[in-house]
Amino acid sequence: MLDRTSEDATIPPHPTEWPTVILAIVIHGGFLALTWWWQSLPTIVVVIVGGWLIAWHGSLQHEVIHGHPTGRRWVNDVIGSVPLSLWLPYPIYRESHLEHHRDEYLTDPIEDPESSYVTRAAWERLGPAGRLLARWNTTLFGRLTIGPAVMLLSFLGQEWRLVRANEPGRRRVWAVHSIGVALVLFWVTVISGMPLWLYLFAFVYIGAAMTRLRSYAEHRYAESHEERTAIVENSHLFGLLFLYNNLHVLHHRRPGISWYRLSTVYRHSREMLVRSNGGLVYDGYWDVARRFFLKPHDDPTHPRHS
Image (cartoon, rainbow, N blue to C red; front, side, top):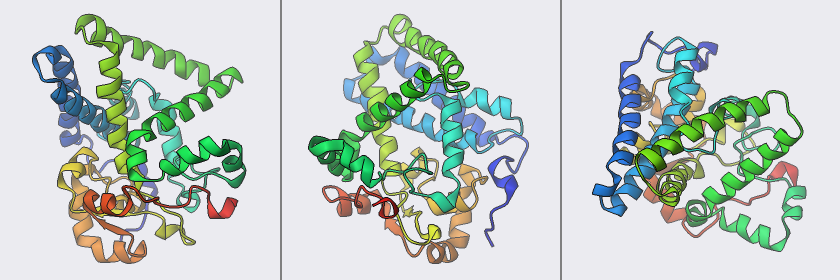
């Protein structure tokens, strides 16, 4: 049985998970190396590897949020809090993602902070141009091209409103985050001499696009909340990038399982997991692209808010 336990979300199976520690060293060391030697590399390499490292770092932050790699939260938070992506403060990500794990609210645009759906009222407020962009954003092509911009602008606009309203603790979070961003940009632009535009495009935007690939088909509304979470099988390269979070239904059932154990646990429990999520399974990300590259994944408006 794969019953959820309260310990899963916070306590790793070992005091220190060395594969995750090594991964953190590889990601941060790779970032330093790539930004230091970027001028010696072809631009296409900088774009691909830079985007990969930022998306990989986001996957590492996700791992840290769920109590890895140590039993000490402050150590884990230090590992996850370096703002390589610039736009997302780790404390806000942690809070919103743990809210997302209230599975009974999955996909709900009001209760689920990671929902890609909107209410009918919000849909009407978008206007014709906004609705056109929203429909484009429901295709995989749109999610990879304009999706990062939509996500960043929406998030930053919402956070600006909270900061202006003096939401408790929000200004402090952004002040601390701004110091980290300044240090990252000082290293990138002053020490390493990389143009800001290149970092924003190759690292931040491409990294966000790779992350949007992972989240694109993770959840889809169904009457039963157990059937709202997908599985993407047979994806070895992207599986490593996403730290096997592509086996998403298993992650939601047992969020405390370490990334390097997910594949093994999934193989042993596949039949039960596929049955529990109503057979919402994709055969790799090529299968996702084949189905939805230019076709909407779902209606943007949530059925319960129509």
